[in-house]
Length: 203
Image (cartoon, rainbow, N blue to C red; front, side, top):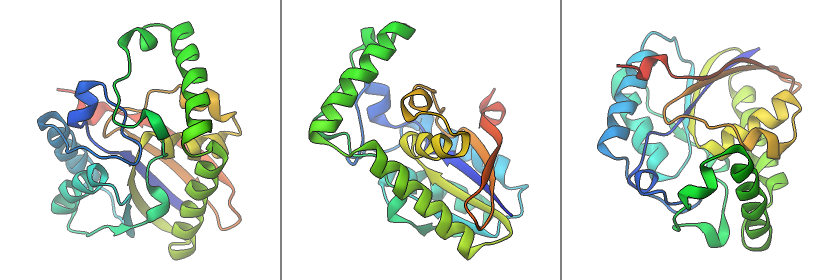
């Protein structure tokens, strides 16, 4: 059984501007760099047998802060990259669409239509996210492994682990540098241990 720690990247300049990333990128903001340092200190107490990151800059910046603290350099896994949001990438998300649950659901539907027409299908994101996990487990059939990735990858993994519809899991607000933990065996069976822990970011 492999213990897998998944960390979302820190807050970026685009996140503070309300812009959608996807395959496009933005540097960590000062807040994001601080979050990365805080999660790095939290992870220092873990005995890690492997360390992997998305190829996108915001994830690699976060991973670099962690690597400086724990003394392990991450390997890049392309399948951990964020979902391609198509036409939405680089554009601002209107605040009114995230102000309430009904509005969030409406936004999810509208965004889904745009992505379906111009971006990456959710089923493909799920397949490559779980493929990355299987590769990690093959390389580390036991022990503890750290992954730095994105909100979309978190959602795709949890959709598989929890057996929940992707649309429901994608509504969950994964925090920048929040920690999620799962266990997974060689047959692909997985269970959730902890979801979006943020205590290390407080204060």
